[in-house]
Image (cartoon, rainbow, N blue to C red; front, side, top):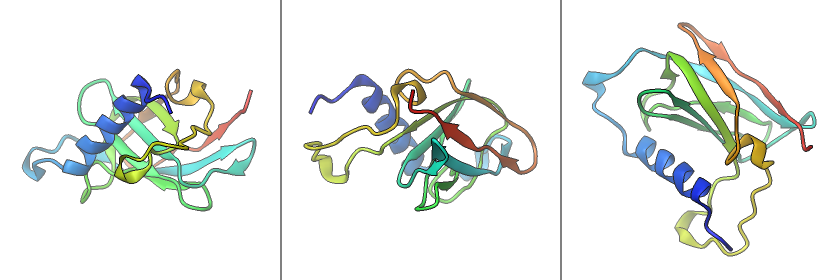
Length: 133
């Protein structure tokens, strides 16, 4: 298995989110949730990353129904208010064993993503119906 640069970037963003941040210096955040589907079929166990132009990215993982909720840190939900680049991908396996890892989300939604979303004050619902072609 080839470990791509795109996967390394996604892993770095996820690790930054897992490590948390100082709660006293939080930017303006808003809750973000939604559903990810591929050809109208819910995508389970996919990573959704919202990366703002400036600041920490927020990450969520889809459940069996394709639903996700973004987390700014392990303990804090939401995403920075403003414009975000969005990437949706299959998470890397835990424990560093990448043998058999396969990205099942088309590249145009992760390593080649041009998805953009605006997070506004208040609750944000951001659904993604991905296309395989």
